[in-house]
Amino acid sequence: MAHSEGEIVKDNDIVRGILVEVDSTGNVVPDGIVRESASIYINSIKDEEIKARFISLKLDDTIIYNPLKATGNEADVASLIGTEKENSEKINADYVFTIESISHFEQAEINQEFFDKAFGEGTISSEAEMKEKVKAEIEGRFESNSELKFMNDCREKLIDASAIELPETFLKKWLKITNKDNDKLTDEVFETEFPLFIKDLRWQVIKGKLVTDLEIKLTQEDILGAAKDQARQQFYQFGMFSPDEEMVNRWADEILKNKEELNKIIEIESDRKISRTLKEKAAVNTKEVTVEEFSSLIEK
Image 1 (cartoon, rainbow, N blue to C red):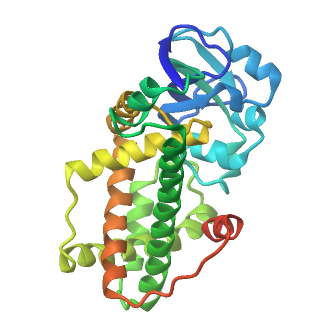
Image 2: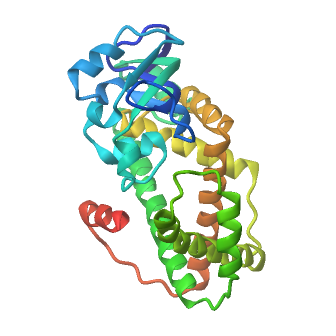
Image 3: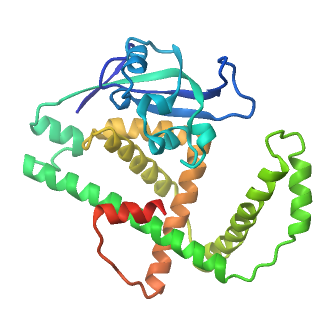
């Protein structure tokens, strides 16, 4: 794919901007979702009416729309707004999107110039080598997801096996005091979410000890590499398996400017390093599964 920056939205573009939750009258929802650097692939919009409203928009233009109606895919909407797909209230909500950048993509001619731009000068010299490179990158994605699955399983087992006592009565009082002005935190919601809070707190204690005992260190190079991987994964989702390095670097820089995304990357990369270290020290049973079986395991 050949890439260029644009000023008017067209078919096959990716637009980035700020996504803010609004109510049925178009007013911003207090304490609602605000997603900076949100990315929307125009061709992923299945609703033709909504897609037509996006086409011809310009930089700094805004549009109010319903992402779920636009795509019909709850998992994609959850990823877009940064929530769990079980959060039906937010996934079904309306949002106002302000366009900050527009990226045009066109089919590139398969030649040495394309290979050098997409994979680095002199790295690839034929279409066969390119296919092998893309295959290796896709396999790497599954390996990365496998590591996260392993870490999530370890997390559950370590939490269940831990005997960490927490002052739950005190924590309940403290949380209620600090959230007293939050009208959405009803007693019913609090009782539902408190066990999850305690579970996560136990994990943070366990994780802190693992980081110390296993001497886990996270470098700036690790963080930048993870941001590039995340950028590539976003392109893969849009059907672009060979974005050029300049485009990946620019996308990664945008990701790291978002504090929320930066914190997520730090969290995931530290988990990944813990996972790899635990694998080296533990007896691990390896099992081959199909892509469908693996996807099913990840969703659990």
